[in-house]
Length: 161
Image (cartoon, rainbow, N blue to C red):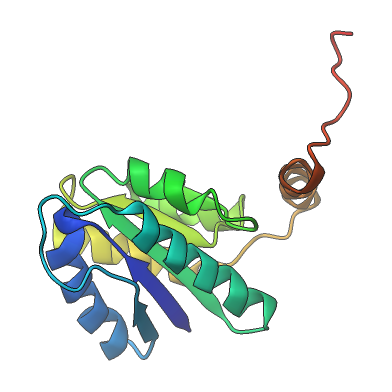
């Protein structure tokens, strides 16, 4: 599988370690930055590029997912989710990694590098990669509703009206 990775300064060490971990597991890793430590770097462009590459690969039929890191993972998740077709999930446990894939068909995982040990992070990502989407009708339906809104702003009728 091709894995697109991006981070900010807070996740740079994790990113480097993770790239080795994923390559050893047989994955093709594409690093979207940064290339060196800068305490004042700006993560949005790195994360958006990783998300764009993930979507482009998936649309081309390439088996690909994305991983974005930061101190908390929140900003990185927000940035990735600005890319059409991305469903980035903030993950903090094995259960949230599984559910992100099973229920939401998430294609990017966001993790707070300052919140976890490397072994925890590697476990979250390994589980995320290994977990398939359930394809249950209710989940397919909900993902389609999100995609419809993303595409043209359409929503189901408001039941309160």
